[in-house]
Figure 1 (cartoon, rainbow, N blue to C red):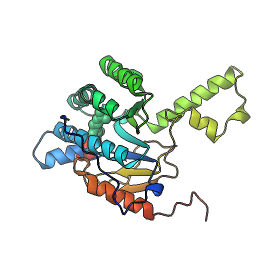
Figure 2 (figure 1 turned 180 degrees about the horizontal axis):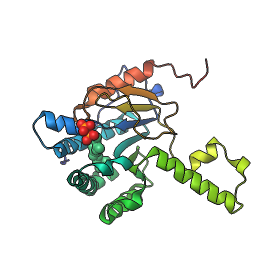
Figure 3 (figure 1 turned 120 degrees about the vertical axis):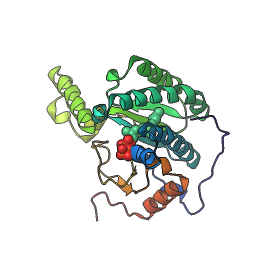
Length: 249
Ligand code: FPP
């Protein structure tokens, strides 16, 4: 990502400000295919994907969406070729270093979810710096899921709750949905209202399994690097036409 002049966009008039999703989650799929279709190495797709994410974050912040969560690296992604994993780890670190000052100036609050202890030490340090610098910012909450797995998150929450029960701090009957949510990585975040997945796959892929229970889904064939503002606008229009019933009639 290179420094660009800051252009603030206003909410398109056909969108109802009062009915925007408070929290948008994205599965950024299709980077590899985007690059391969152009005869480029897969990593070029990830690089381009960062640009798409940066623009989406700025748009969400400009349009008054309170939270954006992006699935950057799953617990299963370690199974990719070493060179690609190494590239991604270096990319995350470089992007954080290069973009932190600008995100901070725009009021973005950065947080990471996932098993961060297994990430390279230098990336962990960059993450800690970004979180610490931005934790009181008033703008959008930007959550990056890195080495994240929904099942793993649920298991670690169970372990933490079981330990509290064992210590006598909690009784089994104290465990309810609210308490369980408080033990997830996303304890301080409202559940996503809208999940966007690019590249046409109809899967959740172990992403926010608990939190997406009532999210509206928007799946598009567009590959992530080509997911531009016009399509995000379309996703929001679509969302505003849905009738969310949360299991009621
Ligand atoms: C999936 O596409 C994409 C990823 C596994 C990586 C996504 C990461 C970024 C866009 C970088 C984000 C950067 C920061 C700092 C948050 P794929 O490789 O599975 O594509 P394919 O399905 O076409 O192979």
